[in-house]
Length: 371
Image 1: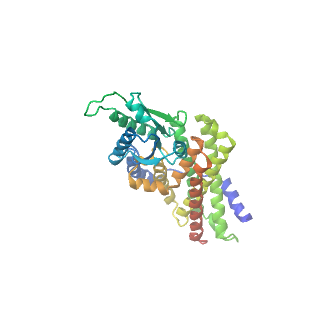
Image 2: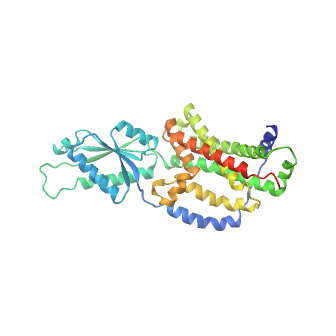
Image 3: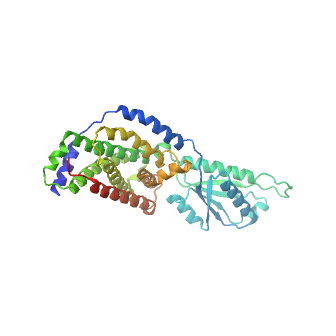
């Protein structure tokens, strides 16, 4: 234990500055062209929207048919039948749904009575891209329902859509905060972990470790814990400062502090495990510098930090599915922007922890206690 703590102490005392490499500058534009070209400007596809039919009348059936027509053609959203409005609202809040369409009781009767019935649309307005896309498409659907039929109607009745926002207006600064926190931890891990580890090997520092009784496990754990501490410090600092700048006062409630602190710890653990696994057999100190920009683009932009995952092509969604960035961003959004419960972040915490454990176990197995 003392030997491992000595490594942690040494790593925490060091300061390292990384120059920009020409190789990275050449590869970055190509990677950004491929990733950003697909991540931005896409249309929302297969957003999960609940349909809560509390009317069960003829006009409710007509609304559902129009909804499923959109689902079958342009596929902006995918219908998920619900019977409970409260449950649908909660699932939108927890991130299981992107929205919910509420068909209230007496909807058909009010339509035929000419009382201008209203549909309800529950949206997660913490994601402005998703909110605007769903609102726009639902308004088009309502406008089509209001078009006169081929046969003259005896009673003129127009359907209205009333949007229900779960949260106060979310500025783009707030929306970007979870991604910025995650990116800060990744940069801290990359520079304070990956680059530092390879440079120490190139400078012969590890030779000094190898003449001591320290085991390979102690070396791996010591280097990973040191990197995790740096990333946690960076994440906590940016969370506090970012919350103050963005005006997120709820972030400083005791329950919220515990949530985002555990998420930052799990994210730091996952990032360090991943980075050490990538660098454990690398010898050339130029390799991590060349990989920095590639990993940054490959992991950060598909995570949903700046654009909804549902707008990505399928192959990019598959990357997002295994990307630890995605779970860190989702958990921090739920905690900082949505005031969500522990159930909303439990999946993210579990994935990040398992990802870190698997990466660390593979690193220990691949680590060579030799020059």
